[in-house]
Image (cartoon, rainbow, N blue to C red; front, side):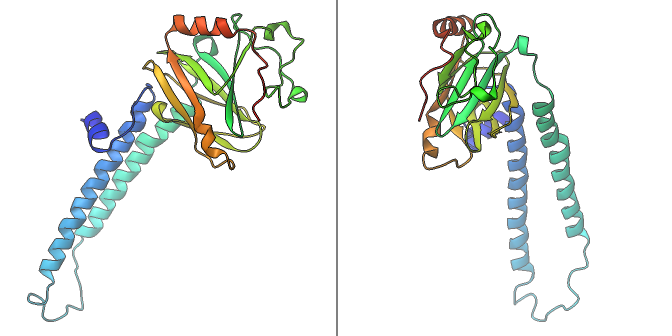
Length: 257
């Protein structure tokens, strides 16, 4: 029922992650509540027009209604909203920020947002990130990769095209090179601010092979719209490994200005 309501009436975009189902369910619950309130208020408005029209109420009643029903209804609505907040919304948020998958069981990616693109860095075929140093950060080395560290020789760095494995948790460490950005993956139901100086973890598990757009949900400058030029590519484990191997050693691509 929720899926039918979400996609046929609300027109929600395609869902391609496991964690996104809870987000969709919350939106459906909220819209059901708004629909009930909307119909209820329309019925009440019609009743008031009929009950207190000039023909039926030729003389004003200065005492007004003494019924307790409106107060009970208001308390009921507040109770429902509290249940949605405390029982549904907060647990969804808590799960997303407190329970991260183990790195060894995930596709681990470092993402550095910048005006106006998405840089992504993967450990190479050895599964280890090379050493990083903030002093080494430059326009052509946004992650501060230490070129002398052998572990980083096979690391992979790409621009605007982020590959992940279907049905495998993705663990992203997100930061920004310049201003505050916000990585929004609509199909994955994930939005996370990218803040300079912080490396913020976020996670999702993709369920459908395909190509999904990355958007920036924070106005970040004149070229803000160009941030929509990034994509998440969900593929099989075999295809991902082949892609990673083909890119291995590209830890310092040309800078994006």
